[in-house]
Length: 399
Image (cartoon, rainbow, N blue to C red; front, side, top):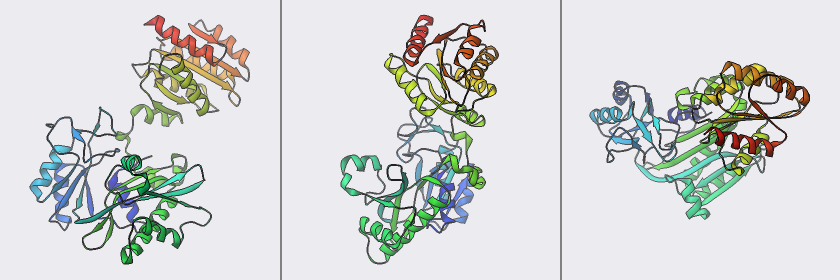
């Protein structure tokens, strides 16, 4: 789960991380009113969407020469103009795709005189089983560009969870940023507090870009991108309240209600599979047969009839879907239960596209018999290769 920049900064501030003063705004008037609570005379008006590249982005509804989603303002009138341009309009950035995202929230912050910008991020390094702190002197830039053009300017530090953040980690961060004296001490403190925030919230990512040194010699977090491990959110009901459903795909939101792992893709063959690895293999073999999957959908190991029905509805809600491939290995899950769910779902949603089903595992023969006796035009497959070939052929035949 991701949160907005203003939420991330408010959260990090509770851990003692230094951030500039700022006010969230849901309307033009709220944005203008924010000026009264900030010292000024420089303000920054930021569009709040779950995507990077806002400053270089373009609004669909505004002329091409219009400024992007991060603007400087020096008066109430300029704040008002920036807010009016952004709210309700669609911002297209390098991370949103061509469709963009509608801006429904703003963040008005105190302007800062920047002397130097740095990059600092915390991630989970699954290879080592440790938290990785990624540091670079090239702040304010896309880290992907830095990694491609000057990888030597990126330093990665691994922190053993058994010991946690130690003083030598702070010194290593300061050294990587080429900071000395008081700024080196500030860097160590900021890195330590960010680590506390990462562990304390079960975060999956905390990205600070830029981490800035002000003209007054203060280290401040000017932008923050924070995401959390969804599997740990049950431990953080307060964080769940920060979720903005308008930033998420409606189908994925609906899938989460049924504990379905669902991601919409760009193809035309819907996939209903149990197990993430099997789902990936299913998508790969569809591609090998010359077609593209319309989604990743893992119903899990213990899917009920209701869950399967919900999965079918999600798949068929996508008008691009021209066929469905069901690939089930019944280990924990029984094939007869899946077969009953498939039939119930096909009848309830008035299935109008080809359906190929491959079942294997517990009660497989009973499951196949249930499908055969259903009277529905369901194509049975013997193995994964057979299933992929059949659904691609059925879709082409129906086209």
